Image 1 (cartoon, rainbow, N blue to C red):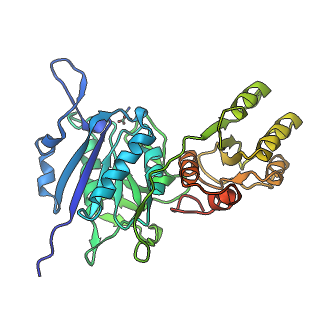
Image 2 (tube, rainbow, N blue to C red; image 1 turned 90 degrees about the vertical axis):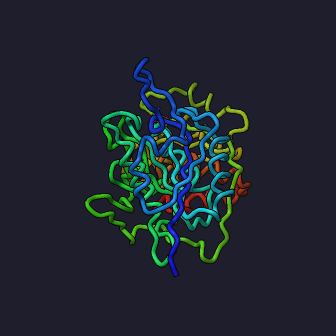
Length: 344
Ligand code: ASP
């Protein structure tokens, strides 16, 4: 029996990748995505079938929000059975947030969802868009015995495929714009496309049904510590109406000032039901509460341990857990458990 070619759905949300230069005015404008083949004729040579859908009004990813994440999740849900893989074209600025959010929203994923974008528009002579797009499609088409090889949300940029919820954007200039400091790349594009099988997320999809979660709560906030932070700033953040989760960006291995006013205010907020998550400001490494005196107090007052999670994954995981109605009693335990390979 002839095996059919894998089919891939491209979801264009916006960002630099889908733009072309208007040579009359010199400005960048979104191009009609139906004309994709015209700009990248190489796509016709790929061993897969490609369809595309586009946001009605493509956005700069700085305008990304919960509503758009639900739109991406819904497109994947509607087309889940009909396609073997999905490639989401997205601006690079908030791509790590979206890849993290979608990793939580898509439970028991058994197919690849690959986020990609570019630093230069597709119509630019020196563009990085072609390589990023073509290889993302190839990665989404990878199959073994008729089943997708990648069964998670990935982010592909500049020859590397990362686990999406492990990434951060690190550079606004270089083509190598992303990094995954706490988890190795899951595939690499060189002369050959090399998948690091041992780092792939073990999918539960064989046993469990694919489920799309569309309730993401916006009752989350953040506070980044800095030496000299005032009581007024802390008061203002803690007084935020309806705040359920605060991601506290601490120093080093999860350390914070030991001033009495600081500790008392956090303690008081926790007693009133606020979940405070300890996430380090360092790009690599992990929170280890109790290692220093400056984190022992935080541990004693039951701060949630963010371990080696990225800020992007911490915020979106909190949105997902609160949106899913996880009880106050269980929040800490569930947050500290890796759900989609986002933490150790
Ligand atoms: N500002 C753009 C965006 O994130 C940058 C990019 O596409 O890379 O939408």
